[in-house]
Length: 318
Image 1: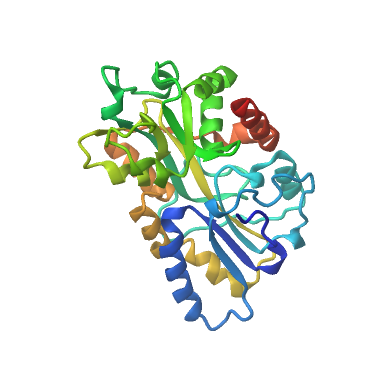
Image 2: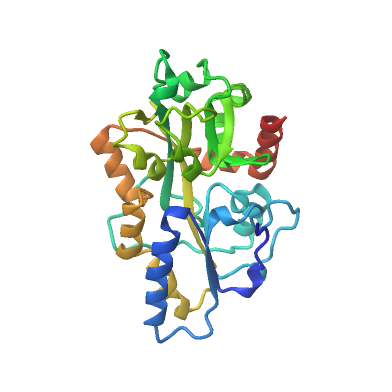
């Protein structure tokens, strides 16, 4: 298992959710091969799940601008959202606001008021309920119902070995506090990658979860299985952002890289994998009368994300 990336080697590093890693890699490589104004450009596209320790997660060192790639894509509410990193990055003006002229401007909760973090895609988590395991119990319609259910040790979330999905933990914590984390701990009995969760669902397999909290991309693989019920929770699907960061002094030559992740081809790949741009997502919400559960910029600003994540993980794995 890889742990630390030597980020000083690269002009661009993209840590992508698994569903879009391969199609983006193919598309991006084709784009790079057709560029004439980018020389000696070093980049790395990786699946986010390939790394257990991201960047400075386990370090008190806040990287200087020169220690970071000029362009970064990261998945989840990770160490770039750390209070000490954000404070330094804002004060020292690490990043610039990314403008998009390819579609209409929207005023949404995903727009960073400071203009440094540009959310280019949304990974959203829902529930998949295995009806062969539910027996005579009610299908939970909300996160609150799930937390207060009798499904002790019957729920699966992403993660294992004491490191669990930060998106799930933070979403539950914001909505229900530490009491919600305590209840989540009581009902979770399985951890792993979402691809592992869907493998045995709907087959009445022993020692498999009754409810899995997983990205909609994986849940949707089960949509035609009559033994599975997909639930978009009443409080909203929990949102994990895919974030683009661009340094202020990025050269004009590298702007074509930024433009790729701001253009229709990338947006279409993400939409097809059910990791849409906020513009597409908000339309989807309106069309289906769905809600979302995004921790929001005020929560990020007012909490030390790294310390909070360590606290929630430590409590959860005790």
